[in-house]
Length: 364
Image (tube, rainbow, N blue to C red; front, side, top):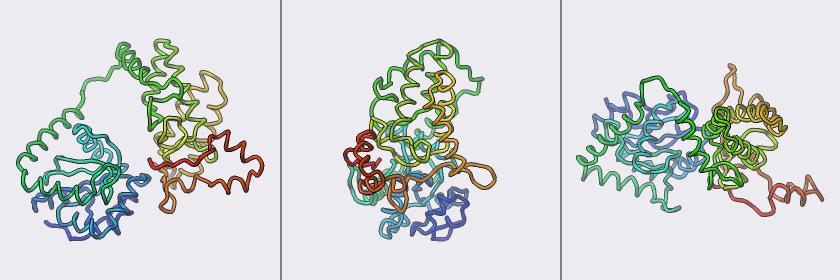
């Protein structure tokens, strides 16, 4: 049965999906009915996956999904399905794995093109409305996908079958009992240690993520095998990020990543899972060192979680948006005049201490 030719997201429970309920796109939530519609019409699926705090999800929404001309192309060529990755992490995991298997870098928004049966055959992340950033424009992308589907449907279907089998095998894993033996842990920790930035902490290069699973692996390696360099890599990384701009020195809490290699310029969204893991790592670090920096950041971050992230019913919000009034980082930033009005003659020292002598951009 064909669904109504209109946006159906107002019926969804997810706040993220409801943010898109006024789009001119004929969005459907992920459902048996939406998949059946694609099969009945023989039309490929455009799957867009994001989450409420995602800056580039907002950018693509404003540029493309709110645009009548873009929406007209989407509605004409595809069955359009929107997914909240915080509501359906299982769907996100499957199609993100497919994108990685194509050799593409992952991220959100995740934009995937599927056969009417839901099998992925091409995809990407953010696409601008007009070609820029070295990326093609979104209408150009959709028209190219449509042309390929019409002219090479059989070969695309075969590729989608192969890709689906690969993803299924990768995600199936082993059903035996998971055992992390000493040699496996030592080898993994050694590989991670080889990627550590010895001056700035974290992994070398930019952007820089807290990467708690890697840090935890190094810490466990130190506890089990006594490899002091692994402990030191974790402590250096924590100290640098907790003293850097990725950490909110006023409100508490860690941003998702820094756009530079120095932990200075944050990508401002805050994720619950990052900060939960931060609390655990800081707890371990404080117990091992007695360094009050870790204790202070534990107290500040716990206070932020209770003050800003606790919701009715006793749960916690999954994330905090990077944008305010449509501008990334607006809530967290000040211009020079605002700082000087508050600090007066002390402002020069403030700018020097925090590395704010020149303006920074943070489109990340």
